[in-house]
Image 1 (cartoon, rainbow, N blue to C red):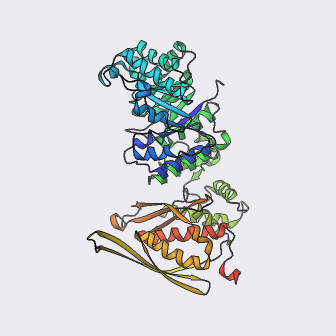
Image 2 (cartoon, rainbow, N blue to C red):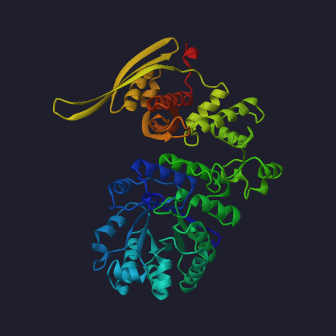
Image 3 (cartoon, rainbow, N blue to C red):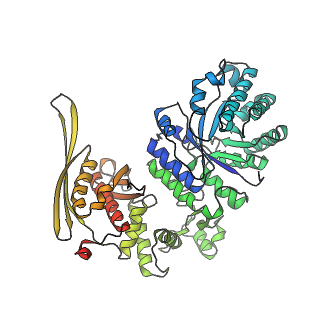
Length: 538
């Protein structure tokens, strides 16, 4: 193993799920796992088999990855049981994934007061559980829970726990700062000692951010010899969160020269990954997040902007394009042109950098994002906006009137039901379609009515499926707050061949915002398929 290689272990789907206000669905977990695999993460901890129905469903049919190894998390066997007779441990070992990460106590205080067993029994619990995973053919890893507190309390016993895991066949022994209270100087000293005491063990680091130094602690551990780093996207996690991989990865590659599974040329994808997670969770991105925040390379008026315009390196520690971001002079319309050109290349749009339509598009995007539109996770809406600016999108249809009625009533069996009925009028060329549909909610009813009308003119739209729908209320204007605030809708579509795309709609009316996003979703599909507009077809 190269001493310059750092292995990336993502715990977003497990640790991140413990964040207050975060409740991953199976669809969320599958989508996030796919994004992590695509960017090149080494290990993806999918959750805890047997802990809850969502994780059970996830591991019943885990995603097939190309780059990452899926990991099942769990605890060592309980005291007084063998590894073979512990149902909780075996639920983890039976998960059809190539790796496991078991957690166990390494603080003598917890061994004796929390799990109420002897120090020797706990060592055997670690050793035998790790060995059981290895015997099952899994890459077996061990998380040393509260290791740094345990080391401060009883260094000899904490080291014995590391040795027990190593003797059991642990591929990685991960030192955990579980309550996030250790400081970087302490982490460096303790990890250095562990490396000398157990030189053959491959060490990892897992830090929480309760003292605000999770990233710094992770870097200190790596400097001391750890070669696996665990963390979450955007620093998700219980209490104050975990080490943020979005910050750690570019720091390791650009500043410290380490090799990771995410090469320097792939670092720009981190910004997209960060925004994708925020949108799935309906969270506003942290504008001041290192590297990927909207304000990370923003220069406002005055001394800083003047100096930055003469030489951006004055106030930029790395070039923004290295991490997929863009320099912004907040008083300039030219900010972000290179980023726009990069996105055009992804869509196969050819346009010269000095094309005046590009300047117009940048202004429109800035104005719309100021109003509340979000194009980072709605790539289909952005592509359509760009193509419309360049005059490349036919007028496939026009959505005229629509109406939605909701009825709450008791049916003949005395059951309370809520039904939605929608009517929609669509114009395709010179033909007007008027359709009525029922749905299990107003958005589903409108979608069904629109689809019935459009499928008559464009049969390929029948195969389009809605797979995700998210709403966010934006209190961006004083006169539009509470129930009168702007509503942003994000919709994800899919076709049987696995193609997915996302669109965004904005309005003070949630149904109107949904109709905007639904319309863009259908237009993007027609554009992608090369379908001619009604005039051209005629």
